[in-house]
Length: 301
Image (cartoon, rainbow, N blue to C red; front, side, top):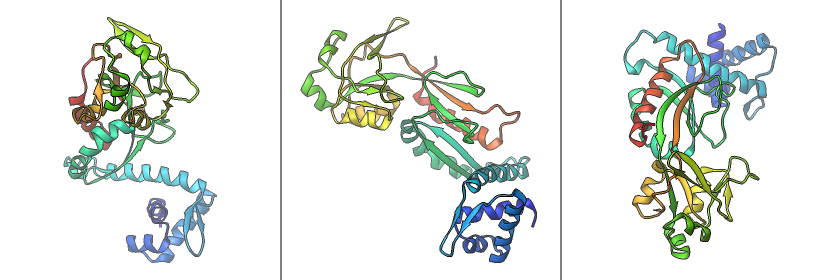
């Protein structure tokens, strides 16, 4: 069995955690699947799988090899189909990262449409508040909300999210509704930080083109977008957050916009991907689709 075929076998065994199930799905004898993996291990000089009578589990090296296998095999599949123009010809895995708010509100509800048009593409979606290592962790593209740091990545600006100030009806009933910046002295803010222990400057607003802050106290600090919004719904304070993520909550009366005349600076939204001579067709198609579905929520700079 050649190296590519052996990699196909290994990937299937790793995914199904079973030589028997993997062999059945590939139409191979179990002995052939076992031999293919053993040959790979001998050629690589490392153990890829822990084998017991009850289960098969990847080693640390096996996990690293599996990730590279999936990428390489997907690229080979795409190479086979590169001159076929039909959307159904695109195949392979896409690994994408974005924050949970964008995923939940804008992307996942529309994802079935994309997958119906491209039935042979598989999407791996990471939703995290940390800045992932696009190259090191093997991401094809990421959606970034906020100011970009200098990097060797290619940035495709999409637009800006407007920021709104929100509080829950229960909070406003207990503390009153602020009408002017001077009212904030009697209010609490939920503080969002990337690393706990930091202290944000306070309530942000634009004074013409200048960004200014009103220092505010608060009893709740988070480093998660989900916790940020949930804390606001629970009545723990005022938040400043991108409008698209809370639009339905505002429309349904679960949150109330306050101080609309004092909004923070809009947050830029960008697609980032690694610098490659040729971006694969499946990645390009997916990025174009992301740009299309996010456009109605964005304003141009």
